[in-house]
Length: 272
Length: 229
Image 1 (cartoon, rainbow over the protein chains, first blue to last red):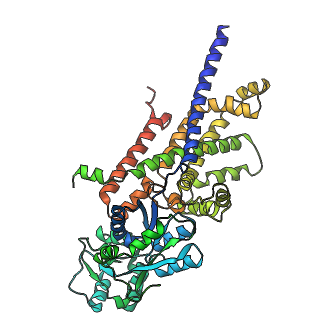
Image 2 (cartoon, rainbow over the protein chains, first blue to last red; image 1 turned 90 degrees about the vertical axis):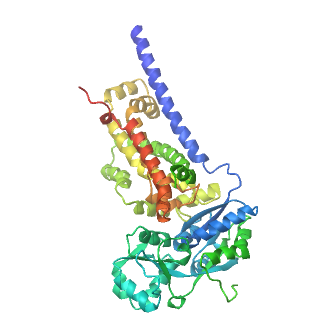
Image 3 (tube, chains in turn blue, cyan; image 1 turned 135 degrees about the vertical axis):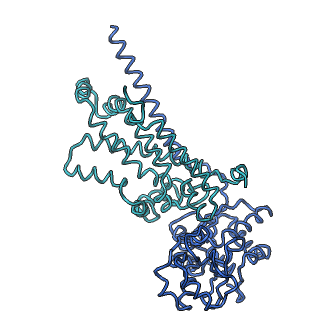
């Protein structure tokens, strides 16, 4: 009899422990399923090219001060964001560094062509700790590039500023010579970071990211590469109702003043 | 900048999100991993060796390969992605749920392996006795196997949790880096480093390290306990 009771106790204890584990698992599953549910009105999600992220953050803060809905931003290279949007990422407004990617997505029906606008024209710069800021002629730039042991650029395949950097080096006639010394960053932010940490001698970066940087830099003449016409557009499929107003706000005079301070030019030929 | 300024400037959302994703991913991997471990140790079928290897594969594959497979499966045009769209009306990729799946994929083999070994070492006489008493397969699994399995399950769960906290590559590929939604601590650290915000990155690095260390210390298995005299 006594023996029987002992087994029963052991069994019930084991059962209790098992039940506790089962509870943890169910709790976890519940969380897993519940994560996306019951979402209140979601903040506006803006996919922004890395070069424009600081400017867009300022613009978003201003927009929120004016009573606009909260803005969440995901920054990355234009190519990467374009792929994510194509795959269905819930990005409401795509603030790219390039027209080509935006037009391709409009062609596929992923972005709304009516909302397309060129909000800024980007300027390329060269940055580096030991750069001589006084020497700005194309010959000087070519010489600085030849001397550098390592040069960072954003991946030309996915980042328009990387592509512009390659074009500039080709036009300067140094591409073949220094190609093997290039380090490719995922996006312009990473390329610039390599220079800031001293891991490369020079980095091609957007002028916009160098405005409040202590790193020395010089502007790359605009005629050395095709203009970096930065386009934006709103998602075609049920975007947030705040998406189009926010996109329009980026084209407002207030927002333009922020962009100008960050070193962007503007499209003189009226954008469609 | 003082330490307080630094702490005030840190975006804490990645930490909360990481814990939420890790808990859910652990649950998912424990359920799938135990079933796989049970199947692999109980059923003997031709090609079992290869099935075992396939289950273990995520442990050794590069994160990019995992990310690729996941995108093919749960992407908009993938079979699971399409099914998800049909049921829930929205895409699965680049959502918190995609981050949960990505994190769980590498944890499933950890659980499956640990439990397969534990299932295999279960005393066959106990099972025989239960069977003679009329227990069916489901009853055997729930009332005999799993209670015996508790230590293994506990260890597998904790290691799986630690693994889920640390996932990076596959998560970045299928979930992206959306603040508050898919930007887990490991991804936030990467972004902060790229943006030159090393101080904030450092805070997150410390927190993730402490979480992982604590998890391992509290449940790292018998070898972590005091050695016998």
